[in-house]
Image (spheres, helix red, strand yellow):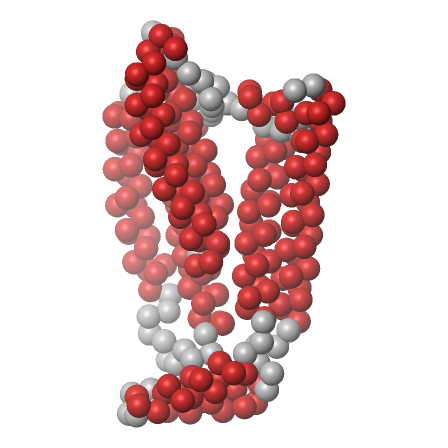
Length: 255
């Protein structure tokens, strides 16, 4: 690829990210200014009626749900699309700036973190960032749910229980990552490095970590519709997985 082509495609990528952030921001503002229902007074009445019958007359709930559904606007669909575009595009733009991919030729030279500590730190950030992301998602779903009872004792429980759960996951992950997966890793390394002298080992490592990266990519697609606040963590997770593969392949090359 020529320098001119690399710069052209790179700046097109930057422009695409900036354009997507702009469109996503417009969608978020539009969603903010759009009422959730075509008739808010009637929707509030139906919501109160739904809560009154929630425990005593469950057979009456379905007709009420259908009436509320008929009053809903596109507010939350716009919000979902805008949030997805902003989060995904902002993370991609950060990657473009961080690795200098405004010249697309630099994609070949993208590297891993410079040390095991840096790689594990990045993995820790990705994992622990899911904790506030879960709380944001919980609050977001509660606000948009026009059928949620006013007394929701479960709301906020994720933050209370999630801290302990995430610590239980994080500490073993750091220990295993440092002393099992990255014990013989060589950093920094080119993200796409390949050891032609140990071809089978390189193939096995690439398939193994590639499957994990593919799983994270599937979760990323799922998150776009169900858990948008997890998008940054999943994108960082993909980079961590690719970096782990490169570090292990590079270790044998350096030996």
